[in-house]
Image (cartoon, rainbow, N blue to C red; front, side):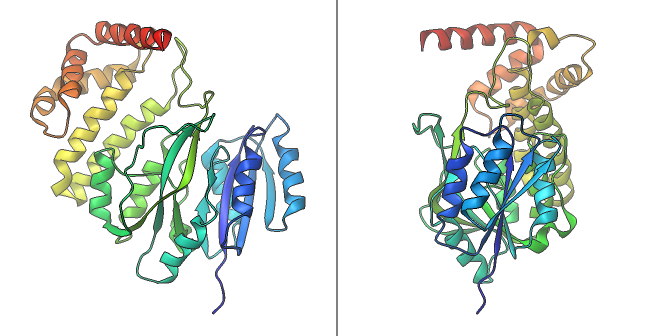
Amino acid sequence: METKKISVIVPVYNSINCLERCVRSLCAQTYEELEILLIDDGSTDGTGELCERLAVDDARILVRHKENGGASSARNAGLSEASGDYIGFVDSDDYIDNYVYEELARVLEDGKYPVAQISRDEVDEDGRRLPDICTPPEQERFCDSETFIKELLLHRGDSSFCTKLFPREIFAGHRFPEGELNEDFRLLLDILQEIPGVCILPGQGYHVVCRKESTTRKKTKDTFSRVFMDIVENADMAQELVDRKYPALHVYAVRFNLYQRLDYMLHVPLSQMKGDNVFYKNVKKYLRRHVCDMIKNPYLTGKNKVYLLLLSVAPRTVRGAHAWKMNLREKTG
């Protein structure tokens, strides 16, 4: 039987210090029928030239250069170029164990499951393990789409496309939303409605590297990543989907909506908590309209509820106190 090809799409932008590790981990895969697409998204630090040098060492590496448009734009460009039967994604900061694509392909080739997922861990730039965001299963298990959505709403599921392998045809009518962050969550919800579920493997073979300069983790006094607005908008989308198609998940969607707004309020700079900030005003109004949901929802922790209730009453005071607490924690180590 002919071995099916996997196209691995790697969006690349100013990744000169980590790209080679990522690419070497792909070239070392025990599943050899790969097409490795390095999509250089307008890098300015010499990463584009590094892509070309890496391609010389392995004929499976294809390099495409484009104007900067963000990770979603680069992924979509990769989807247009990909020729594989299966599609995978890896971020240029990250790396994977050599067995990952062989195991993921095995699941899909059995024909029982439409999407396969490997579990992941997170490490810092020095290789130190960070707490798991998603707890891997002890053994291979199938998670139906409704249950998978429930796990996402409880912040226990993995929305990343990088840990998954998809049949090519899934993307026939789908592309990543461009100009947004938290784009994986939005697209995955669309796809989950069309498939029976996801097969999750136990091994933590995908390694997420948390870089200090990462867009979503950079902390300064007045800068504010739009990811915290996108997660609120995606929560609204999830609520609409749940109420329309998965009504049994309503209480989980309410919890998710409140939690995402809590995350927004604990990150928005004080300088933006003003009356002319329409987005901030709408979040504040939402919290005040949903006080009963804060109190009654069984899936919010006591700490979540206290913060939400205080933020609904005195948002600027609570945000200022939280910022002072976080700064003190950083200074004391």
